[in-house]
Image 1: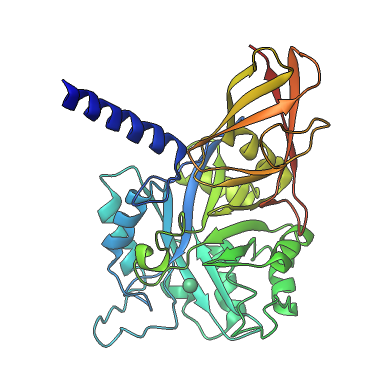
Image 2 (image 1 turned 90 degrees about the vertical axis):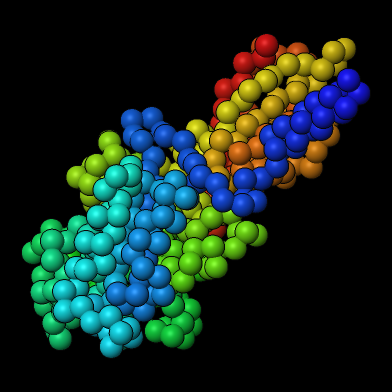
Length: 371
Ligand code: ZN
């Protein structure tokens, strides 16, 4: 009996611990809640395989995406840069897409046909996705490659514009080439997060030129090598779509309904980032500590991002610093000194690792009804 009691206590302790702990120990689904009017789809639309300079077969990318619980991926092989071509000759530049598509067919994962147009500055690197055939984009003239992508109805985004091998300051250089592409409706998005790099200057360009905000892994080796266990998950783009279909995702991207997400960092336009943050936090309990005017509120973070908040209320906390973390898939308890007993409280918090513009973090508010 004692042994059973001990076992039960251990189990209870484990259950309790896991409720408090972070999600990034070991493999786990990446989760973000839906927002009103849209479902939130998780996308990694910039990845490589052996069909360009990556080091894994397309099947592995599909398996990794399923393991991370992604909804949509694209394999964006460099058209022009083919270091494995002697070992894996493939005159058809659509080959990796076809292999991934066949692999994903029995799973709830969408594979979008894409490719990377790879040039020296000023053109730089761009991904064209929702293409019908990569081969005709393999042309010398950069302008012609973009024109072909447009002809195929592609959504095109500028990859790692802040990458220092192409811009030594680590800041994006918007050249006449990009300006012309934007003007011609041939460039629609921009990576503000590429692999582990976030560029505020790229976010500024996105806002100034009305481009879709993107976050991608640009993975070349295994996801678990490039994004180790200390990291929560690979950078992704959260897409707010009407349904989980290719057409809906395409529409959402052209309409700029995205948030770039990498671990605890979330970057997006306020009309999508704010409702996302709002949905990430659920109030599971709100009651006064007996014989006190201290309101205890339990927040549950249902997302895969550790969220860092700062108290933005007129009331102070009893037991905690004004800056606190709501761990991914975990809970946090706030004790708010409301000075008198109230029936409802406007919980106001500033999200410190979320950006709607460079150096601009949103303040969110939740209606808390006291039990
Ligand atoms: Zn790439």
